[in-house]
Amino acid sequence: MHGQSRLGRASGGGSGGGGDSPATPPSSPPSSPRYRHGRARRSMSNGGSGGGGGGGVRAVAAKGQGLSQQLMCVLLALVFRRRGVCLVVPIVYICGMLYMGSWSLEGSSAGGRGGGGVVVERVLPGSVYRSPQVFEKLWPHMEKDWNHSTNALMNTWHRKPHHRWKPCVNENKSLAGYSDLPKSNGFLIIEANGGLNQQRISICDVVAVAAMLNATLVIPIFHLNSVWRDTSKFGDIFDEEFFIYTLRNNVRIIKELPEDVLQQFDNNISNIVNLRVKAWSSSTHYRQKVLPRLLELGAVRIAPFSNRLAHAVPSHIQGLRCLANYEALRFSQSIRTLAEKMVDRMVRKSSRHGGKYVSVHLRFEEDMVAFSCCIYDGGEEEKREMDIAREKSWRGKFKKKVIDPRAVRRDGKCPLTPLEVGMMLRGMGFDNTTSVYVASGKIYKEEKYMAPLRQLFPLLETKDTLASNEELAPFEGHLSRLAALDYTVCLHSEVFVTTQGGIFLTS
Image 1: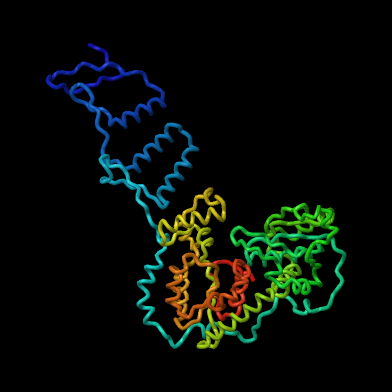
Image 2: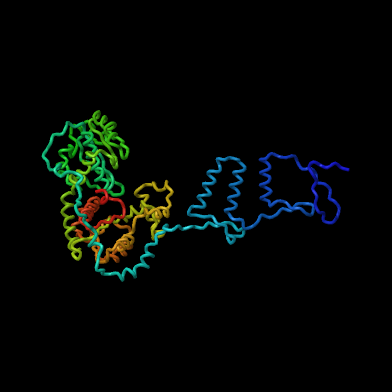
């Protein structure tokens, strides 16, 4: 008799005999757990071995295994092989992104001979510009609603009894005579960058800063912006003399540096120390960091000066901002003269509703569309034009970013098209008899995108229709001055609609 083997015996059915088959040789000693996992994985990938005929037959890998299953197997194998808990977090994150993202990996039996996975694009609601299709369906119903007896324009405002608007600054403050100011601590020079909105904000902020530092303010310099490309100076847009006179009891303001001071810096303002002040700096920062340098050097420069003062400042500082914005800053005489004519013409064209009209600040210029990275309905031509515009104005900035245009649209951050503005106004109760003034720069593909808005509101005007070519000639090429004309007409409207942030919200 043979002693029973501790390792056991393997038996299998022979192909022709009925007797017991000879015992199989003893198996190898147990290997390391890491090696066993690897061997098990290889046997799994080969389909395992089957009995019969005295030898195992390798099974072919099952067809139709989805790409997602294969990917999961590989990821799990990596986890178990490395036995690293730290690998679990990134793997779970990747799986979640694949599952929740805009792309899904789905197995498809019809995806090829091996049944491989196919990439299927998932379009989430609100990801695609479909306003033209919506308008096409709604237009027949809109045509039936022409000439309503009531117009939202006639009952927009409801005055509350015993309620009146309070000015943020006392008017008498700017009308008082001269008062003595303490000795100046030095000269403050700034560069206001951006368009008309940014320029106004910077001017109001620097008036407050100059008062805090007891500095003599030099009339702000306007930086030549790569997008606006406007060479206008302060006096071309604003009334310089009026600005200085209105603020005379609060801040010393001069048009340019005195000759003797400029000579100390080799007659070059760029040689004056430029203090890099962080955005939204507090009044405490200016007193503790900027004032000592001003006292030491006699003149300092802050460039750029966009958003360099915090919103939350003491009330007397905020009052100076208010005084500068609503009292001291008025447009130059040339702008005021033409703007008043345009307002009069717009009121006459709105006589059906007592001179009342709606104004819209439409931000659909090429640079706005390019900066948003949103996709509309222009196809490859639009993509090519937007790529060129982004590179021209921002020099590779967008090549360093990965932006999902569909996510931007879902978040509601795409500039409204003229069509979308028109549908919004009609939905609010403004019918086709409403006079509408559109304030804007050069609209991207104007003929295409403005057509439906004119269809919705035939009584539509712009600065190009209210003013003649001869009247606009002195302003051409100066976007800030043209924006000042738009601002004035919008200021006198009954209803103002904005489609993006700009001068009309902050002024």
